[in-house]
Amino acid sequence: MTSKKCTKCKIIKELSEFYADKSSSDGRHSQCKSCSSIQDREIRENLTEEKIQRRRESREKYANSLKGIAQIKISLENYRNSLKGKMVHQQYISDHKNELKEKRRKYYLEHKKEINKKGREYYKEHANEIQEKQKQYSKTENGRDSLLRSRKKYMQAEKQTELGKLKHEASIAIHQAVRHGMLPHISVQFCEQCGKQAEDYHHHKGYEKEYQLDVIPLCTKCHNSLTHFSKDEI
Image (tube, rainbow, N blue to C red; front, side):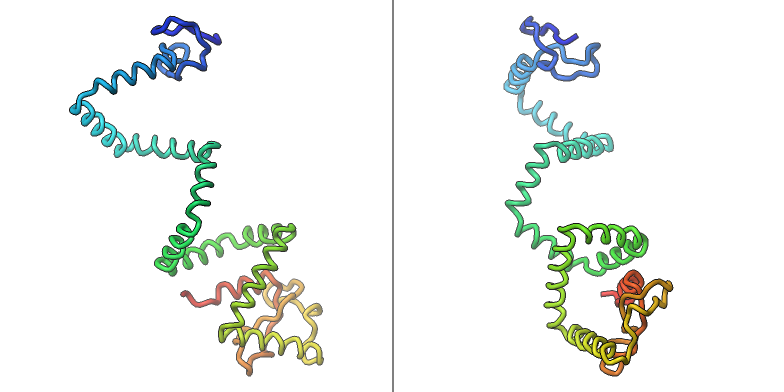
């Protein structure tokens, strides 16, 4: 069946002209959308203040019930996934970009310890998965560009700190030591953690001048993990 007669205006219309109704045998309301709208408008116009208040209280009571909360969540999720919902969301982000950025910054500063702690715990549990995703992304054009920008930004900020200056001096010392034969080239070294081909020298005692050449060879994976988890909690 592709059409039915409206019980109000008696006109045969397509099923799309009727609202959905699970209680009906054909799954559609008995009145068409136009007639339903007219009837609803008449009912609203004839409502007394007392009935309006009762309806408002009824809606509030339903919204605070378990069934109401669940239904609201489903409705919100469906709206967010709809084309209109996505467009409205993107427009809101575009119109309130600076406001949202400041809000996220304040939230991070207020919950810095908890956020960093959760981040370390999540990384520890999903280290292999995260590293694999990063590896695959770094092979793409966007990934390479993003990595270069991040490194450049990090190095510029790092050089302004005291620790950054020590790291930079230690890195230069390693390059000079390899160049003058004081340290073997990293390509002939093996990772002390997993035994794979080494790719970095790790300053396990610090970056001070007396420890600049006190290093151990590590692969990138072990180096990143060791560096990540050796940081003091902020």
